[in-house]
Image (cartoon, rainbow, N blue to C red; front, side, top):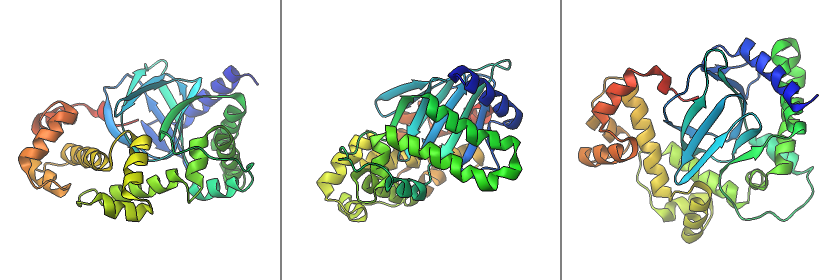
Length: 297
């Protein structure tokens, strides 16, 4: 099959099974995304995984890095990253369609045993856009086809997913870093996990370095190389994203939300919120509640 034929079949399956903006599927790590109009930028956290756009186009930004991807490419995130994303090409006739696959660390670690022993580079950036080659696209199609044959999912889904992850490992040194528990990428991933779980708590670089089993200077250097943010900047971004979700979803006052996510000063919370989102909390929340298309896809 040509790439175009594979994409056509993937689109047909996604249109049959993906009716909502985000559709979890019977395959545990597989999600379908759909949108019928462009969206404004939405702040969210991309978790470790693969996103393959099969129709339409999307643009994203984190820190000072901007990226765009379309059906000839895929997005790979090796650590959780706070990102601003917007769909820039979509219509009711040709909706934006994408397929998301969450990375399974246990499968990645097992597959590393079957890869050639190579010297890994230092931990690089935690998110990238790559060309979608035919072997990977065919493997993705084998997995997605199982949505039309649910009785086969229990036996074949794990095999298809394993092939996808194997091909990703072959092509992506950063992903091989993540799969090795003693690598810099794995250590940074532990630090990110700790921050996300304890985002409302103050911390010192020395304490976070101990969690990551790194020196403080090494943690700071490699964390910024992977995320383009310092650990404290990363925590601030997570706090503000969670605060925005809380404000959009419930009628809680801004000062109370700021306190819940770790801010002692309402004025500091309002100032940093406005710096990131362009408006103070009350005004931004009022806009969010009138624009349901601000949900992340």
